[in-house]
Length: 342
Image 1: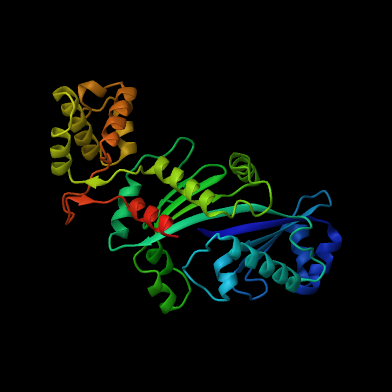
Image 2: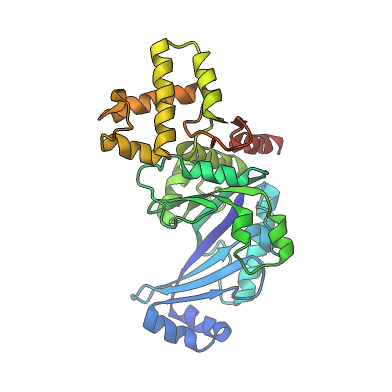
């Protein structure tokens, strides 16, 4: 349920001077000119992906380690995720203390000044419809204060100042990396959901919410699942996907007034015509000719009807007409099954 996290240490110049023994004489030179130093795979131990050193300019320095916990524990690259069981967390703490010491003996243990500065929660399933899930996700609504700063194929990517959602095709991503064919093949069909808390402020918020005050209290399966579920619901929703014809039949057979049935069908037609949820909102805002009279300059009514549609189990994003099935279960149903099985 974890993919990556970062540890940060606040330190001083004497520690940076000691690290020069490991990383070379240009460390302090680069810090003096750029106030930043970064090295990938710093000690050639799988799982320690990156080491960053930053100079605050006030005699204070920060050392940050970017860690893939499952890779660290296995000692090899893998597409598997870290299971946040108590047993695994204890093993991880031991491995981290050994690894930190292997970087330099002057670095303190975890309990002596290190803090979490980033946590990437993740869950994944294997499916033949991964590319379809990503395509449907990209048509869904973009939460307030979020935007797509990358806009790349194979991924639904939403980012605010401190949190990032990335729902993507792992195989598509791995094909672009410099890794073995075996590792690439092991990622085939994986639909991965990542929720990344990328600042200490964001982490403070979830620590307070979940009463997780100790350093690794956030490495908890129930917390991880709740965070991922809320993020998925906020972006995609939990409703299943339908082609228009089947959605029309379901709405027509519901216990609703004929007027409401007509409006919900009209809403689906509007989103289908606009192409995406966001383009639908834009069409309503711009009083486009494709917008039914009920929704012209009336976004709140559109959203009320959208909630009614979701209440009867229909995702407002429709399956493409060319898709082989009339119905596709929401992938989060399988993720929930996997979680309950553990």
